[in-house]
Length: 338
Image 1 (cartoon, rainbow, N blue to C red):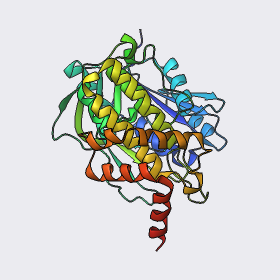
Image 2 (image 1 turned 90 degrees about the vertical axis):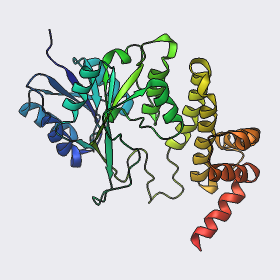
Image 3 (image 1 turned 30 degrees about the vertical axis):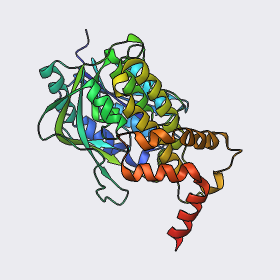
């Protein structure tokens, strides 16, 4: 029987410049040999990432490497899950890194509290090493979060949807996987777990720790980042967040109707984010997705006015964009230039 307690899955695609820092931080985790395994999934890298991963596997017996054709981060994570032998699963992006005691703290918190999931905090850094503003808060002390509270916080853009800050019992992945070909995939999978989609296993609560042990590194060219050199580049994540908002709405209607107003607010704010980022040149009626977003906002004016969870600024922006989205964006762009 395996003695592996924790499996950490690292999807890798052309991050050779940062991979050693990531793997060094995982090799430094405070577990006994054989208790933690690191599964590196080389997702068809064309740089030296695969070679670096193989070098680490030769030096560290707890590191294994899978090489596969490029299929995206979700497919790489799913491949790692299938190979994992640990009871608990963690995920690290290959350009990020973690504190030495992170997984020990998460594991101990799960065992101590009898939960299926534990979460640490994160900090974020730009390419120049500058500390960026915190995206999410952390508790002052170890705290419980009920599953419905966590789901509500995600719909309010307050919670942390990332699986990279979490350690999760593998039973929650039974019958579930990361959606392939979609960004914002962590959010989609996590809300399924929290709501117990299809009657599958669901946590009743998770434990949150008061540390920031996961360290995010933002680099130009990351999936969610705009490539400044590409004029009118529109990251696909802004389409996916709208698709996921509608998915969340249907899930909440079926599984957690008590928080439906928060889901409605989420659907509107995700469309607001889309409308504020789409290049004006792409705001055309022959752009079917844009046209559907515009139609949705106009159809839900009453929800914009009455939803108790929208801020005043969100409400005003949505109402303006409902009337004349292209004109509002064009005027805003002109003002910014001035």
